[in-house]
Image (cartoon, rainbow, N blue to C red; front, side, top):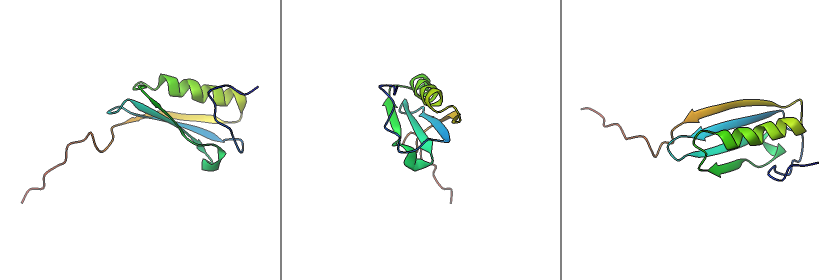
Length: 86
């Protein structure tokens, strides 16, 4: 019985990656192999809780799958540009 918020899988994923962009509060759930399903992005998930919930649902559907993350980072647009000294 597929969960309503899970993507359509073309093959069983081996790993689920959870990453969170702290500067935009956007989380991404992606899969390995990459052709297993399209990545899922969620706005307003700065702590990654919604993404982890999705990842746990995938692991419940595919017990051999593992979760990697959450990995927190800041996007390049949020970082100030460093000035080069001459």
